[in-house]
Image 1 (cartoon, helix red, strand yellow):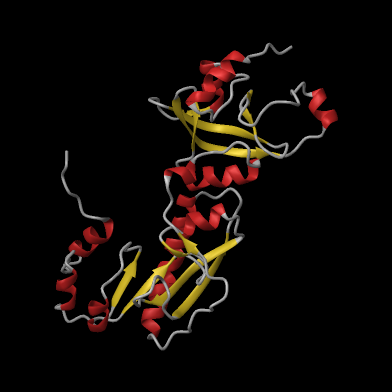
Image 2 (cartoon, one colour):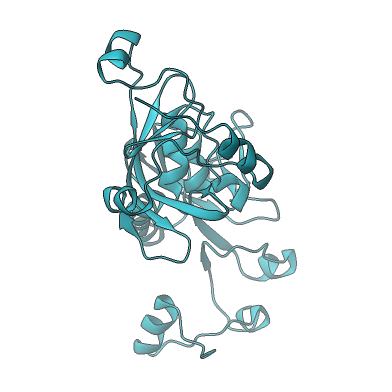
Length: 276
């Protein structure tokens, strides 16, 4: 209904009797000794930084993945580890000196939501330890290995079935993965790759060898490099999330191709074939 509600941080602060504001000018006038920034999402004016020194809890192993979407970019890139850094806020984009670092492995099934929660828990402890032990001069970031985590867009979340299944699973793991089924948008909420199968096994399973990427076979979808993706949970447009088996039983998508552009739909229908 348009009502504004406080963030969990603001709600907790108010319960503790702390003054809360969303006005940066008020921060400068508050007489505070240090500011702590977490996922603020905007560049803090240099004038304010001159008045109030600040540290930032950033969810990556700097200088890798500076910027807006470090967790999602680490997953999409197939990184095997990430972590948190407590760093000085300066006028650059995540370029400040680093005070503390903690590292975590990235499991090949963990989602961006799960990894963010893990990093938030880890980061809270690292941040508190840094503040209670007293901040000294940080360490300058390396000039090697700098990457930028640009904001995730809808195009980043679109599934290109010509890619290998392992790469497509990473897109599913960041959340919001989508393709098309007919004229409708079709979300893939959970899926896992099926390893490449050789010709003998393929023949035994009666799996057509010439299926184009995006072809639905049972609850799996043909992908690039001889791999397939097993759909686990999906959400057709206008419907609630459901398990893939229920969707297949209702939609009967066998042999249809996901991800076609509208101009390609007529081609698919005109070249339909009968299997078996």
